[in-house]
Each structure stands twice: as structure tokens, then as C-alpha cells.
Image (cartoon, rainbow over all chains, first blue to last red; front, side, top):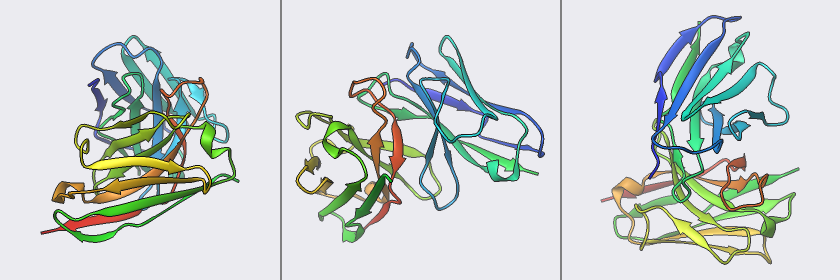
Length: 108
Length: 123
């Protein structure tokens, strides 16, 4: 199965900052990578698919990029409501679909 | 508006069975992949099973193959997960998720999730 290694596992930043979360796939997955945001007690919400396509309704502060097998989620102008856990997901190797381990983002 | 509502979770003894349901509304249910994803409280997400768009193919993770069956009832716009021979490591919140359907393939991510139904397996 294709593995996705997500880092960091947690980070803390202030409102207005820009942060980046990365996922590295264990092999080539083209652009078949998505990013999700999950808040406590809630289901995950799709932010980005196809590595860089923003899901409708998601703020433009969120962006995704790809370089080879490395993928990055960037969040600019951090807001308090961005406090959540973020997951990447590869779906190229389906089945199985695999998720990254998650990154907990705290807004100071 | 698109909605997914799961039910059927609960407390079950090791070796027991449960059947989860996910009722869909607001979209053409039979034209999208439908998937079950689970999450142990406080832990990450794990893909469990996917029903293909045409309903002919279904895909299961190695951890549940031979014990779980995914199916759908298109007359009721309902996705099902029959879980047999349950084990302690099946304890999790189970989410139903709709395929995004942006590329016409079963290789897909998920744009709508239900609220989840909790399954607890005890010994």
C-alpha cells in the first residue's frame, strides 16, 4: 500500500501567520491527494483535492501544492477558526486509500 | 442539500455482529462511490470499504476483509456495512462518505461526510 508521511504532527502559530503542512507519498501518486480539516467532535471536511483544487466554499487562505511526491497544504492569514487537525489522503493507490497521521494546529 | 445520516452503531461483544446504515439524500446516490471510514477516538482516519459507482465492485481494507461486507440499497438510497466477527480493534467512530466524483473513476476522494456512528466492541 502507498504510505503518506505527514509532518509535523503538531504546530502552534498566531493569528495572521502562515503555516505549511507536508505529506510525502511513498511512491508516485500523480495529483491524487486531498486535504481535510477536522474539528473536535466533527466529521472531516474536504479542503483541497487533486493536490491543489480548492473545494467550493473553502477560504482562499487555504492552498495546496505538489512537487514530485511531496505535497504541501499552506494556510495564510491564520484565523482562530483554523484550529483543527488536518489530514492528507492519497487515493491514487486505491485500494487502499490511505491517510496521513494528522497535524494538530493550535492557534495561540 | 446533500446529507448522509449513519445509524446502527452500539455496544457489541467480541465475535458479535452489527449492521451499519447510511441514508443519503440530496444527490443521485447510485452515481457516486460511497465509502466507510473509521476513526478510533483521538486517533487518525482509516479507510474501511468502498462501493463502486456502478454498484458492481466493492473494495475492502485488509483489516476487515472476510469479516465486513459493504452493500447498497438503491431503492432506499442507503449504504450498508455488515460487520461480523467483531474484534476490539474495530472499536471506532464509523463515518459514511460520498465520493466527490470529479474524474469519472472509482478512484476518488470524499466531499460529504455523515456525523458518524460509534461502534464499541467489548470482551
